[in-house]
Length: 322
Picture 1 (cartoon, rainbow, N blue to C red):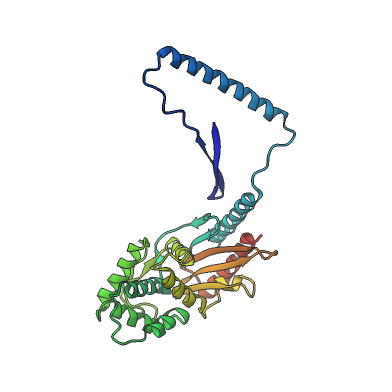
Picture 2 (picture 1 turned 90 degrees about the vertical axis):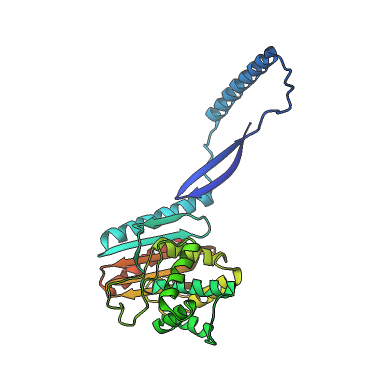
């Protein structure tokens, strides 16, 4: 007998999974071939009768059952997000990579994902490495105020504070510290994310070397942070509080209504405008619709791209909370 086991939404599709009752496994090995044939014939006739009854019931129904309304709405939302993102990626100048994940259903829109210049998004992984070092008891602070440095690195995107923390991770050696940031990111599954140079207020270090991450890495980072799964629940909460204190709000946060909570980290370089955010969305009835949104760009005009990111953010918010 077939039993309905689960309904699941994935990539905007409804999946129905079935299980079957197993037959009696305690039949004696001495059962005769005749008994086996008779049993098979009975099962075959029973299956035929059930199938005929099922067809008759179906044909007699006045109304075909509708899909679960909640799942259908969730599917409609993610399809609307996909449409808005596709249009932005195709029509906006430069190269765009966008990741959106519905934190209730796990449905994902992931367009043009690839490693891109991280700019200050690399600070997410420095923050992770520092928290991991604290948790493991391997971080030598040399009496420095970690809380102050972490706050400056995230909320005002201080490059100086970031470099001090990376030096701390490397026991005074910048190259070792950067390697540990990259290794920690990889250990947590963020394999597109690599720190290859120190942060500079001029934007680059003059060597042409860049730090790298991807929209998908940043999106999964924020999802796991939201779920309390990065390092520990307490460490996740500490990192989340820092992102909630972000002062740079001209991109993704600018596209959501006033009063909506957003935790984000921006990144800028010449021709690069990035933002990664958790949005605690609300529909008109006060229902929760939390999601992650990450936008990474290159080859853009900064002032134009910032406004385009805010516009896309507004479209995604409307779609996610409808």
